[in-house]
Amino acid sequence: MFGLPDITLLTVGITIVVVIAALLYWGLIFEGHD
Amino acid sequence: MAADLVTIVVVSLYFLGMLAIGAWASKKIKNTEDYLVAGRSLGFWVFVLLMIGTVCSGMSLLGVSGLGYKVGWPTIWEQIFVPLSIGFCVIFFGVKLHNVAKTSGYMTVQDYLAHRYESPVALRSLAAVAGIIVSLIYLVGQYTAIAIVLMWLFAIPLWLALVIATLVTMVYTAIGGLYAVAWASLIQSVILIVGVIIMAPIIIFYAGGFTHVNEVMASINPNLVMPWNPSGAFAVPYIFSFAILLMVGLACAPHVINNVLSIKDVKYFKWAPLAAFLIYGAAMFLLKFTGFAGITMVNEGIFALPKVANAQDYVILYGIQYSIPHIAFWGIFAVIVLAAVMSTTDRLMLTIGAMVSWDLYKKVLRPDAPDKNVLLLSKIVVVLSAISTMILAINPPEMLAILIWMGIGVMLSTFAVPLLAGMYWRGATRQGALAAMSLGLVTALIFGFLNYFKVVFAGVNFATIPLHFSFYSFVIAIIAMIVVSIATKKTAEKILDETQTGWYISKD
Image (tube, each protein chain N blue to C red):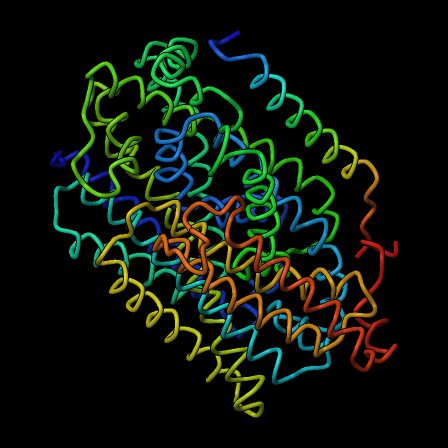
């Protein structure tokens, strides 16, 4: 797809999904109080 | 190319706008706290865009596309781990620093180090001197980037390009402090993000589309479309060290981490990491793709890069010039590039000003100095740092990205271990921090020198070491911290409680 090997699409795609999921999780659990 | 009247007007208006922000911000400056941490009053979007603007540097436009042009897809990890550095900084440093700063009144990250390690003179001075060295290295890379843009746009000599860029950035930073830097970054980041989202697809389309670009890259060299190289730079081990370098090194850089002290409410840290990653990540991927498009355009003879040592850093500028048919747009795109570079340059100069005036002068040399003297010294140092790095940038480095990574590498080796160990390990001691910081700094400078000048020493070719040079000095700093801390007297429990030291991010 897009002229790229599967390994490139898979490794880059999975890394991006994991990073977004981790930052979303942080946003949901963090309850900062001033 | 030589600029037409429209381009000159557009760029001049941008410069005048930045100076106007400096003049407006200067009216809000009543004391050093206003100047260095914007009175701790920044809102969510000003903070998010300040972080993006600080991290998004000369490398982001010229270096990212330049590296993409030279190495291809194995460098794509830069586009994930640089945006992620903002989240790392906020989550692992920001929450704790902000919470402790509420009661301790920190102005700089050196204030935290001095407090946590009970070292008001030695560690604070070492941290400030190390911070000044790495910021100056980084700043030279930024001025080189500005000069490349102005030389391209106006066909003027390097020295004149450097003088123009230095004067404008120096004036608004010196008079307006962090208020000016933050609001300038807000505008610069919006210009950059909107500009890249419009500009990059045009260049990629002009090169034949995303799929065609990848197919041409694969036909030139199959490694250009692989996620890593089979060996050497951008092989799997190198990418691992590269990820640590960018994510942790940028997060603990003084000019980035000091931003967390300027927000109004800690709640902003809830969604700032995700917002910054999505916005900045999208722009960074598009930028990298313009470098890939450059490979196709050069391969198909659409344009040829200039015959200079750092030719690849010009790829995005040539891409713009040949893809955008109307001359009137070039000035706007030049402003986009200038915005990216200046948003980091201003923050770096202010950070150097803070380290000299606050950490060295007020906290070490003259504790009884009146606030107005500290404020005046901050402004003088901003001016001096701008002029000195401008002189250093007259001989531009072979490749912009290499110089900027070198700066980040020294930041990683110097600051990451004392900060992470200080915040999360109650066993970390003052002597451990001093050993980690000094060994990290010295070994990073030595390894960086050996790597940059391709030295072969004791049978080791430092040009082809499997990991980024900073990773070795980072490991040396970790070992120094652990060994020396175990062997020396523990920090007082009262200090550890005051600085919220322990294996948690927030006690809430």
